[in-house]
Length: 177
Image 1 (cartoon, helix red, strand yellow):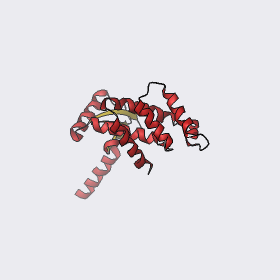
Image 2: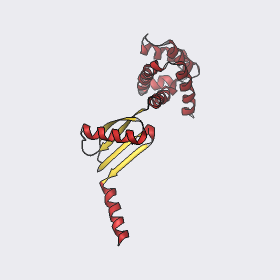
Image 3: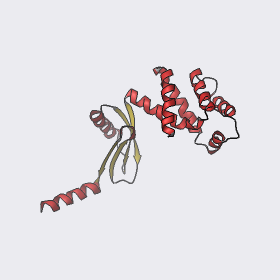
Image 4: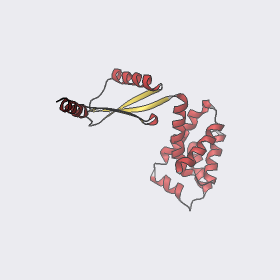
């Protein structure tokens, strides 16, 4: 339910924001979302004792005076409707929308061994041919004996596991006999 409400606010915000300014809006919303990960901030935002005006004023002061009027008004509207707690969801949806418009996505490569940049670039090119989208991969070291590529925004998950290949080979041999 929260995500549906957040999507409506995102549609309104992006319809009023120029394409050139969307990155800046996303960065500001990401910063606010990051501050919401602090327990004290979330208590203040969710507190029924603290007025909406004080909550909005606190958020706007944390941004400084260099904020676009449209974004300022957007935050005020969220405050008036008691929806400030939606900002992390709104931020996530705005980022996803920008990625979709630019056709550029981020993904993760998980493996036991550290891959060289050439291998990662080759994976990115293969994914680009497969999806038609530009994908930037970052690597995470894990205890996985193989390789896993995840691009959540596109719903892509590819696994290459030594154990799985071994099991499939054994099954193939058993079926052949």
